[in-house]
Length: 398
Image (cartoon, rainbow, N blue to C red; front, side, top):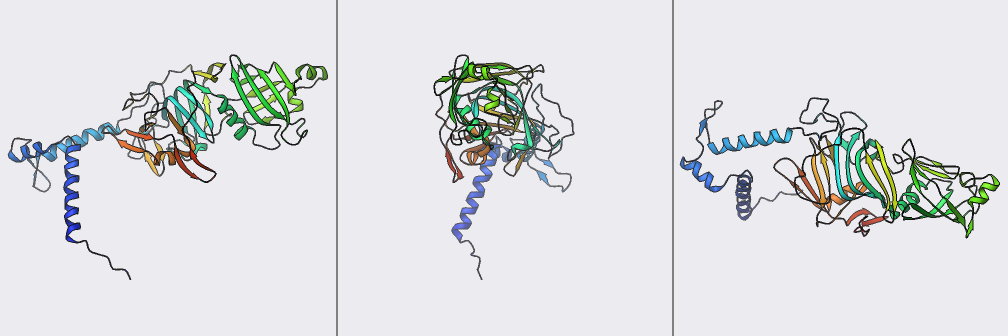
């Protein structure tokens, strides 16, 4: 049987001291100073009034604090939906802002979905939309929401392409292509890959094959890679394929979600090319290949969303505005959340490990209800197979 220990006199004194400090902190946080307290007590501050319920005097200082709280509560509950995003459809309450989407603005961010799969975001205006109407956006379940892209510019670098194909696109069996290595230059994507002819020859590694060619945008918004040079072991293959009536799709069949070979063209659906959450893209204005990678520019026939000014200055950030979002087990109603790097560097955000990344940083709450989440780029994921995310060493895509 365990007997509870009563605190000694020193502990009692510490408790009183802590209470005094908290009270003073509360007063100073609300803009009230000790001088104001003394002024109120001496009769120079706000006048006291009589509470109608219990006939007790209410200090003028308390009246000021209550008025300030009511003012702040009005600010916290005020819905500020970015211009151009869907307007509120439901009446707001303490658990539901009535807004179905969380606005997303990002600038100068390395956005990773996990395992090195991602892209560089130069700028982005989007909305994160839960599949279930009225439900908060759940960051722990990327399959439960979509990202609707309105406008912006992203760069898929060669290393990003390598990770995308080797760790996601080509992971299903049987694998017609393996060990993909991508290089980009002005106007062309160069690919070195192991090709398994007809799905089984050779069985291990594949036949070393080199492809080079441009990427264009089809009428339905797909990315179309059309190699104008294909060789294996130094021997040109395109001419041979035409002579024999074969194609790349014939000798290396590939038909998976988001990617398929048709004839000698590789077709990629940008909305299904990446792991969840699924992307919804209004329109791809351009797709440009350069040394930096594949640059995609998005636009829309709809109004370009306009977001409020971010609460603190930063040249690299993710800003979530409006709607309701669930992080960990907490739901933010009327979301206003800014994420930035804790050391002032370019933010490298890892969506699939956001819990570990957030836990390694700090969260500050502002008087207007905004949260500023400052996180490191390097942190321990707690995963034995992937123990840490290291500082992003990729150069700026210029």
